Length: 279
Image (tube, rainbow, N blue to C red; front, side, top):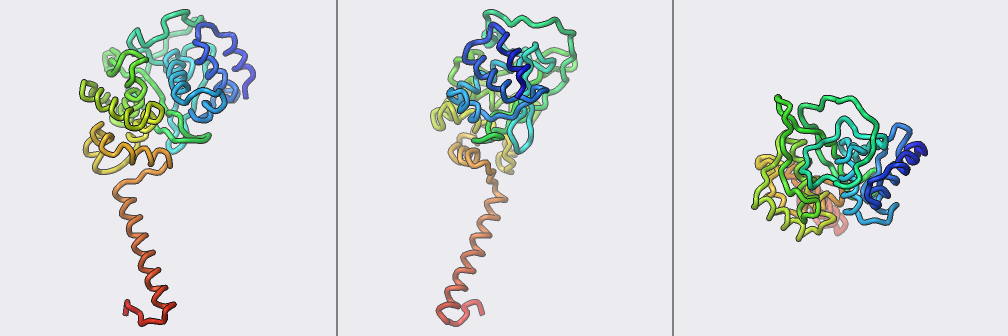
């Protein structure tokens, strides 16, 4: 716990009340360097808020440059809390209507820092516990050689039904492939359908988890939304259990079960005193 960070957060103005509550919770869990590893579910339990509300609050804090997220493969993401001002890694490639409009935070003047030339973000979301869930996002501006920021595709309004789920999917996608996924009417409909099937709280983390799955079939299709929809409930179960199941692991499990069945049959024959059927 860092009392200095928590006190600094309390002094900030212009943050929505619920978002500030989440920010204080993160600061309360941070070490002296501002780093913490809480899951969305753990933060929701501490604050009494829904997981979706926590996710939206953290997204707001990331956009404002007050929090950065860094992926740790196989574990929950590391959050870095910056109550003093914007982080050099903070993006500003969102549409104006996605940014908080009123009462901008007062921050000390900072020198201009160059941004990374390419993104390095893969979203891995685990279902529960600390360290568990939470979206592991390290958001950076995506720039071309001309230093022109590439526009982020997707719905512009944070109140859109598909906003959060698409964001999780898209940021995980660019982290894996280095390009944004295509956003069009079909993609919007597929994301909306996914939310209808899994619910607004589970669809975002499942969409991000899906991008981390290494299965030949979905790799050949570059983790398309069509493949995600085709087995949405299966991927939800894999996300909830924290276990990826691809064609290789499925064959291994099948072979293991076959060996167990053979051993059970042999044991039963031996107990009954019958002739060994395998001879």
